[in-house]
Image (cartoon, rainbow, N blue to C red; front, top):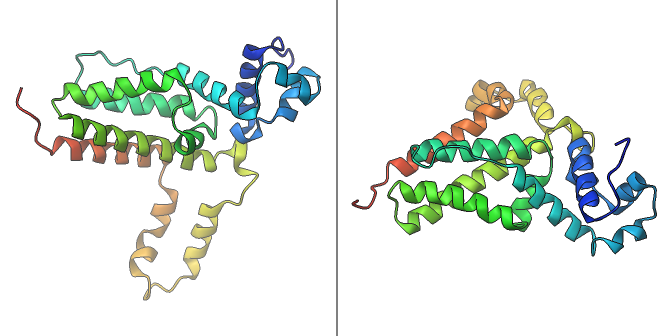
Length: 218
């Protein structure tokens, strides 16, 4: 970043997101931020208590970028898919944010806005509160965990870890097809499925499962 923002709380969050977009959330360190502003790391603590607070602020800012523009009267299935796709579109810009959400939960006010958007879509479908809670949890869990898996394979962060999928694909040629006949038959497809296809298929199956359950009388 050639012209860093002003060194204040807002500027630190902006710089954190810039680093996260370039190299993933794990690369957001106080030392890396200090170098952006050409100051010592200690100078940053005038504006945030610690790295944890900064990361939480940055993650909430990412949540503010997520918009799910389905009309309120649209079918609940459309609203749920739009929600999940909007999350994926934004969170994939910042590798590591999805995994942080899985591990830490809500980062701030935007998390509750987004929760309301998804939960209200299911409630408007006529599901009772117990099914709304479970359906919301399933869609959220699938969305964030799949994005976290995709992040692990992202070129921006992959240099820090081995390419496990490539190793498995290479190993398929050495397995005994008589001992592992199904793996030998579908292994290559399994390890090379497009990530978007996996994401959409899982989302479809969760929604199909929810649709198969009876709704409460209107």
